[in-house]
Length: 531
Image 1 (cartoon, one colour):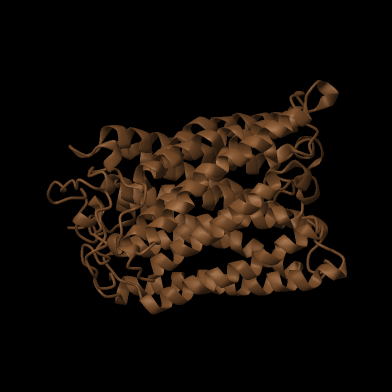
Image 2 (cartoon, helix red, strand yellow; image 1 turned 135 degrees about the vertical axis):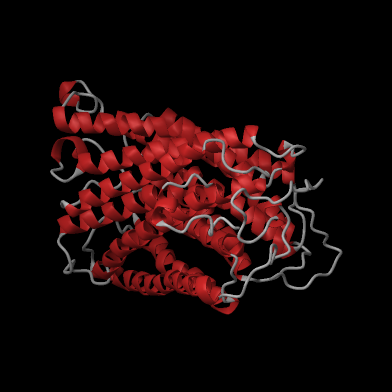
């Protein structure tokens, strides 16, 4: 009996402690929030197609981009790969029967769902107009929107993240199969281990910050209000101390996904495995030290800005190591351009562009001109959407046969990957040009000379939306009509491919064999395209 057959009632799903089923619950919830956030983005792009700002009012526009940001960051991007793919795969990848704390795992999903419903309740009562960053003093003194309810939702979702991170850390330390050493772990597991450390250490700072903003908003206690001896910049320090490491919460798991897909479809071992593992830990560590680069024009001292600028250039080094090693893995490989590989290559290219433009923003003189323009919007989306979402879709395609026991239509999957890549660049590359020309973000009307680039961006968004809808259609089709998948349809390595598809409830019918080398592909052996 596989895990999908182990109880078919709604109660059996809602009360499950099986990590695989909880991953499916997360996938359904996250997909719903993804399309709600995408709907807000659609209205934003429709509004910006014309310079007059004639579709919605300025206040409604503020609430739209805030809803888009809050939902996409906290309800999709941060939990997507860890809570869906991490939950499903980490026990399988280390030869364990489940996560260390199964009930805590289910609790984390309920907390996530409760936090998401609080955010939706805030939207239903008028939404919030502060932007997803909730900057003081506007959020504490002047906004009359649903600040308290939205922050309550973010707070609850944060506790879900802490529980997930704690569960992963204990699982990796305590439940590895006998003989499976640290340097025999897949880089996917290394990436989630580092991400979990960030979740456990940084998210409590967000929790106390949200509570302080709520208290200030309701009772004016004087933490951020200078009238009562507070400091508005203190909020930015606290918020970005969490929120810049949160960037790596979103991107490190994506790097782990790329590190699994690229060796499989290049038929080569990953280049520089140990350097890749150390680079993951380096990114997670340095990521805690660069929050001040969000505050170059906030009034912090020049000396502090110079230190944060230097550290921001420093964090690019381990990221560059990973891009170099992925490229070296591809060199002279037997490359197969199946759908997961197309997504992985798209991730590497878009992440590289996003990372390089991040160096522009780390330079003090350039940042003065580019901050709060569409250049920042584009940079952020190249990392978060071009990076994390491309990797998330790549992971769904790579492990879909393992999770469901069914194959999807490969041709349609490749078409969707190309559509997303082209649509993404069509949407966000013009925004780099808008930013360089001085177009501020968060404006619902703008001078006419900017219209051509906005029209290009809105046209690209149409292709991007089609690319996102296609997988929803053919994945649903594959559940009923897709060809049956074998245990290892891609001829991949890793313990998760040693069990049946879909896996049994307790993951393995027999103890998995521990390979000496984690990516034991032989580049000298010709193979057919994996399927």
